Image (cartoon, rainbow, N blue to C red; front, side, top):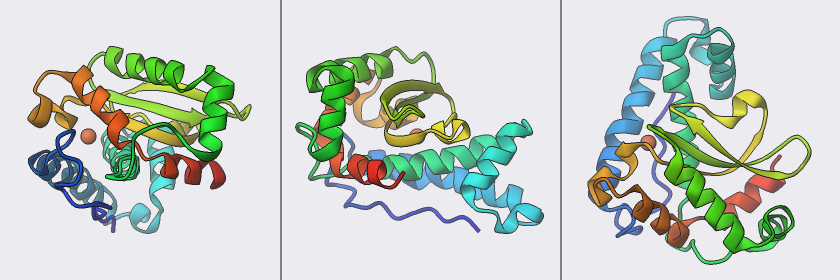
Length: 197
Ligand SMILES: [Fe+2]
């Protein structure tokens, strides 16, 4: 049984980037629907006690699209909520700061490249910062429900750029939402993910 995680902060605390109403829909309805669908697809078969990443990889390999979409979206959203924080924003800190300097030449260059990737992703998808197999940081635009864990990459941060992620609070202005992400991005979570690889 998969469970919708509680948000790790108050629904009002990321205003105006994401408002309470934004969370009511994105977390309370969209994410919740993925969890409900995933449970319907897995509760009465051998997958009932599989962990989420196993279900994602298995359904991806076997092209079980409906199952993959709901399982991957549950993972992606659970990960995404932790990428945001009322205490976030500003310049990166710790090891992730050093790696951004090393692999992108500085925070401003990284920010521009990540923002452009998120803005240019056509349709629905996610902008990811991952640690690749060579131990370098990489920005990846992934369409729809796609997720770095099917390629065994270590995700560090993500930004949801599905229209449902910003339409309530920013209407069609995806670039404004992306700009707001830099005020709430959770560098501590990126550092935890680096060290948890
Ligand atoms: Fe979403």
